[in-house]
Length: 425
Picture 1 (cartoon, rainbow, N blue to C red):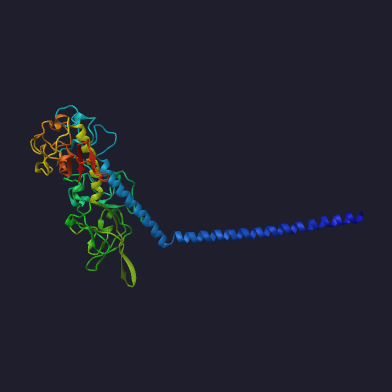
Picture 2 (picture 1 turned 90 degrees about the horizontal axis):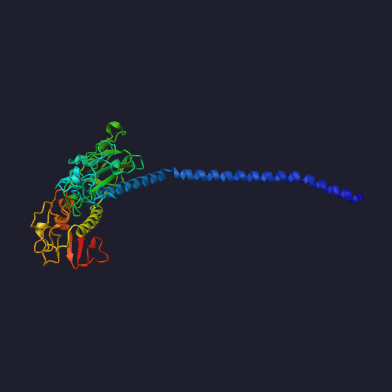
């Protein structure tokens, strides 16, 4: 009994004496693990920050911001080209100006049913309109831009309903628009109207040559950081710190390289814009002399929008504005062409034709009494006043055919009934 008790006491004592040692050892090991873990966290964070804030990564981030701003700007312009004329949920139907009180005039007496733009006279809103430039750095486009200088300036983000778009360096965007695509005063424009602005790649080769009717409709420019402009005589002019005093001076924002000055362009000439990053070796160092990045608005961009609207509006008019679908005019009937008013008796229906234009007059089609019988304001009438369709020469771009149904891949084609089809060129 004594031995057993002594043995038990020894076991208990050994357990008591071993426990503090074991706890201190475990605590020490845990501390080492925590220190190692914290070291790895700091090392990883440092490596990440060095990568995230390296010059290359910062430049990459700037480029992403710039490209997104340019893409958003183009989207805003294309939306404006549609939405300025096709406002949803308005009455009467889209692009129609209706003489509500039947006094023969479309004016304020017809409100509130008249959609905006009906008092257009010879300057009607039409598909594809683009705004003038912002000349005050306010975001607001000039209300009119007959002069070329007013079609080149800041991007009119407020007018377009866009955000205050800026490139990766924080600079606001710049913008230029061709004369025939500006919204005031308007010149005739349809899907075949060429753009007037030339664009070159950074090596100086023309991409879009406006002198041969291959110009851009408009363009948006990210000017980025200020540089030194090197003229052809090797003289240099540093773009100053951009301040209130020179905030609308294009020379302080736009670059000069490869004989092309982005601060100065001439429509329908090779003198346009150049886009991209250009470097030169100076004193054994690579120096950037041009960094303007340009996003073009092509003729096809606007044409695709315009043709879609025209196809829809003509289809509506054919179904709603006459008691019966007329026969087409003769093929390539000269009196159907142009932008001016078509007099009664001209551009007439021809029962012998299967392919022509949408006629204005009855001709030898006794069942067709003209568009004005049912809807005096039909866009298909020959009158150009208050009529964007006639003012912009769309009639000669719409093919009106019998027995020629649309094919599956035809984008701008519409079957009106089993007999007639319209196609927009």
